[in-house]
Length: 261
Ligand SMILES: [Zn+2]
Image (cartoon, rainbow, N blue to C red; front, side, top):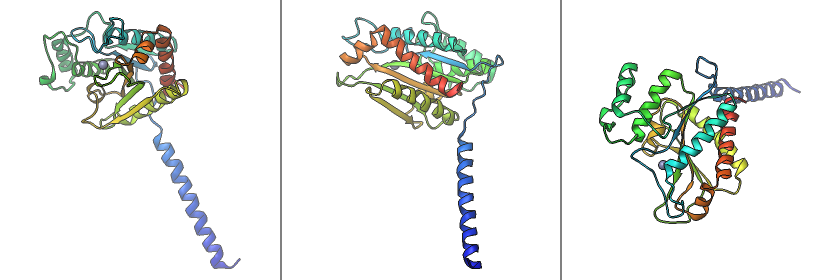
């Protein structure tokens, strides 16, 4: 091999080495922070049962007189039990019986130096609305260092009774987007593994499109739509206790796959 050829091979070798190293570096950089923030060493999850109080959420003629807020509370309690059994600390935004008022949330936020838009707060309407929940989540996070928040909902489509499946969203344009995406991917993988036939629509929302509870929250947060109340086949699943329980097992495993494995 002449000198020139040797030099050429050496040069190509160095380039290949550089490319593979930088590839590894990218993989390394991608690794998200996983340290549980709480002082008790547990991963702390905040669960939000969508709606309730002055806002019952959606319903339909197929839902046996139930409303979204009753189903979201049922899902939430099931998921909370499963996560606690796995060793997580779980906090709920509300218990379905009482919730903090806008004035209480503002007072706590002021004490803790948490920013909020006072005009978006709605005092006195007995609706624990999405913006109030988001700011309340930030208050709770300031007290307990919450690692992740999940808001659970039931979908409805006014135009058709054939829409079906899960929908899952996170805000791709806020300070916790990067970590939200990791938990989001993990939950999506668990859903696709356990529900391969069921449609799963995944949304990495822009700031303008994002749900309020995913965009104004300081911790990684995801909103999950369990199914369509407005579609008979989905409503049948939503009314099936075993189906609801199995679904929350899958979500717990998705969270587990990210945080503890
Ligand atoms: Zn909802």
